[in-house]
Image (tube, rainbow, N blue to C red):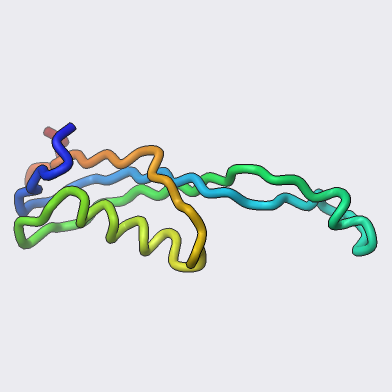
Length: 96
């Protein structure tokens, strides 16, 4: 896909999936054993919705906007975009 793609104004559905490294501590682990029981894992966040775009904007700029909203609590964490889909919706609500 062209990374410099410009998105036209209109109504869009979007789906975003991001992955990031994390440390998992099993539930009910006593405090004294948390360090030993913890392990590295990859967490996933998924968000979808619909929005109205009023100006032309680059696809990457738009994607980065949604990533910042979903990951505002992950400052300094290496977040990777696993999926970003845009589908234009016409005035009747049908996708095209």
